[in-house]
Image (tube, rainbow, N blue to C red):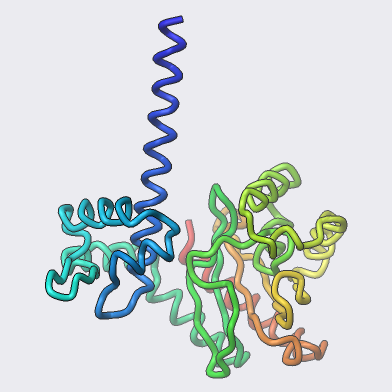
Length: 264
């Protein structure tokens, strides 16, 4: 009985620590997307859906760790210069400079917005976006997890990871309360994966976002394992021509080969 008590207490402690860490990361993300002049506690509290007291405590901890800096006069928070070397090192190790060059060249060829998505333990997430000059609004921003069964980025990866793993990631997607995710069709999922493997690319026709179409191809590492996908996304009117779509897919595949050289 005593053993069970301590096991339960330890499990609760781990769960609490994980929840707190998720809140901290949420605050960091909100600050990152705030203005260059920083962001207030009230703004963070509203966007994070947390009490002011919780937001304030997390912000104070981040200031004490020198992750954030506080403008005491304006009462606004922004990133501390101390993290710049860390960000630069992360960018270097992720080859973001070289990957961005590839995506920019691809964007110039197809004249549409391009984004790179990566397969992680928790799903498929957009990691790098290069917007076309013909800017439009879409949800696949960097850091956003994408449902694998109704996005071109997700389907291009899911077709090559095995049925069981694909189903596990579907369950992960459904843990999100987003109504858009739960509106996505699941019925023909396996048939769509077979079609992706047969055609070598995935096509999303407004399943995830009304008025938006997307084309995506997988990216494989040197061992032939799928690890990412590249997507071209645009308003549906611009991806309604088969010949144009085929040309875009060819360019996506060429870029995928170049990106694979920077994978492991």
